[in-house]
Image 1: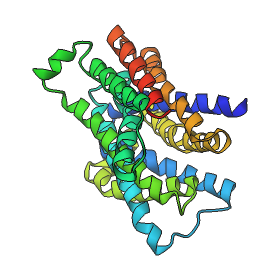
Image 2: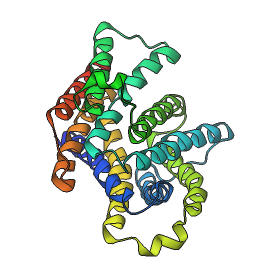
Image 3: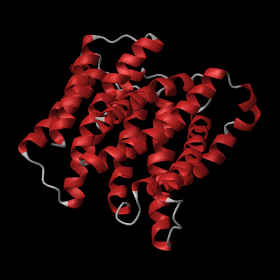
Length: 288
């Protein structure tokens, strides 16, 4: 029972990252927000990996480049897009778009690794794409043919592209590194890559003026949204298997919509709720 509670809380934490990211985007530029998030996450992950595995293993030469690529895709690129998009995109809608991740991972896994897509998987892909279009177009899907997608929506789609790349790279890297070690390495390398860009955006001069809600969001994103969330999720994978644990990810857009309504007052119209339901159902079928 405990593992199911942890997985449900993980989905809640990950839904909350969109709310915390939206708050953080009000107070600082994207690279500063991303660096501070992963500075906290790296410190937490080093503690977790020491507690669970006795310490961070020394990377072999053959592991360094894959770990760097994980940091550049899943941390650097993802979070640059994430905080850029959340400046203008509501938390709930961003979560629905990002929920396309399992669909893209399934498609590219079939393309690059020869994984078989069955009829229900293809149906899941179609449902999820329809759900994302409903959410992005506010229930007017034909408008996508005439109205350009906003820059914020494109940035959130960039999250999907970078996380897909991270996940496909992770399929290779996880063969020689434990999940905790791989996540910790990607956090460290990603934070190092983000630092010069954060300094270039004036982080050193403005960091002392960040309000309490900004620091609370950073701690939430680094500890709950990254370190604890990933630790509990991988515990679920170890106990239940990857397929059963992945089902809980479908609750992320739902929790993001509800938390956005509760904490940010963002509207949850019918098109957004229907889009979230379609994306979640499609993600389940695509990965069943």
